[in-house]
Length: 205
Image (cartoon, rainbow, N blue to C red; front, side, top):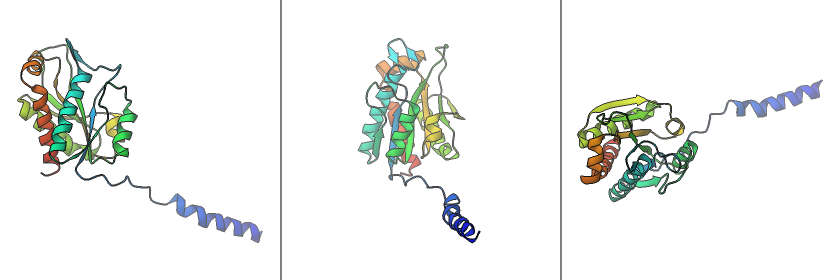
């Protein structure tokens, strides 16, 4: 009996502290680092307008933003640089593994009405809200289109990201005016500049 009691107390001493141990915290992020996620890709084209496919427009903006961020001294990680098929897990795991400070996922909206156009940003965690608000404000302001603010959206990329994250819906790719601006007025460069400004404001620079 005493032997059984001794074994029980030994196991209790060893196992109970482990059961109540604090959960490991996410690793500290790399300061001033941004993980850029070009939405869609591969067989997932997203929305479209004639020859313009969202997956390609997203990537074009992402590459322009990468160049601008690096020029401003930020560390940048890109979830994709080519027309790759990526799952949500591929995206958030890549950003988490690289310990980015923030995640910006670049998307563009679509509608059956070619006159609809506005900026919005998506979030899910409380820690996403500040970044999402800044992104929506800067993009709408610099592109001179309406700001429909931020909306909570059940995205795996946002939910599983260890860092503040947002999906930027810069404008409606299906909008006739946006289509013309992309082809004639450097619209995507303007959008990348707006996202650069949003990043600088978020980091207090």
